[in-house]
Image (cartoon, rainbow, N blue to C red):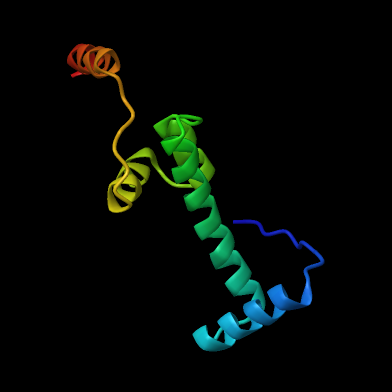
Length: 99
């Protein structure tokens, strides 16, 4: 995967936090930032899904994971599916057509 360089300004407290986190995990600051970004994407996806601002597919795209992985993540966080009965029936009918 191609990577890009990003330069950003953060306040002193945030930098100290990142440095301490990196030291604790015995990694460099940039890796700590990448891990926090990954976690932030997942948390954003969960929140948008919970608020019905994102479908399961869109939440998966936000989180950068597959739909099945997103379903596992939502279950791990105790988030109930926000699917209506009619959507469930429609999905079953579609599944029967393709299966």
